Length: 153
Image (cartoon, rainbow, N blue to C red; front, side):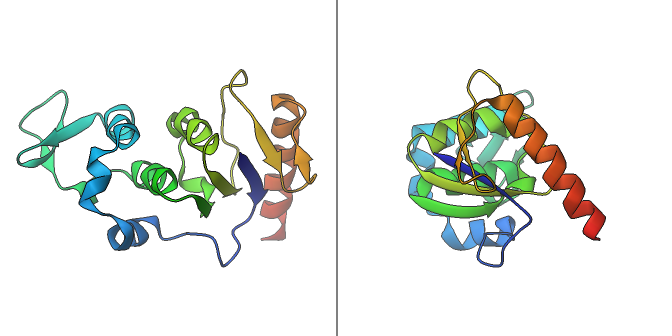
């Protein structure tokens, strides 16, 4: 289940690009969900010359040049338990993040409000120490926590 907290504790993954380079294994590119992440988030696929844009075959790049959101989703998909700075996820990552969290223990720490599909939303609040009752409860908590965090600085 997805767990949601705020801020960024020291033991959470923060430097996703560097951590991806350390963790990535070529076998990850045979995982169907990782291939979907590349397609849905970065609009690309694997080709003999590297990653290739789905709309323009002349655009190629290495796996290390994919978006930080895709890297973070792939890391979450390949590890069983992770704490990660959730602010790197864009709204386009949330459906896949919720899907992965149904199978993995994922804790994200937010410093901004992130939109989830309220019909798919299921998560645990680290603030309330229980599962959210509904999406609206998450919205209210998130706005309050993000504003309080911003006021501190």
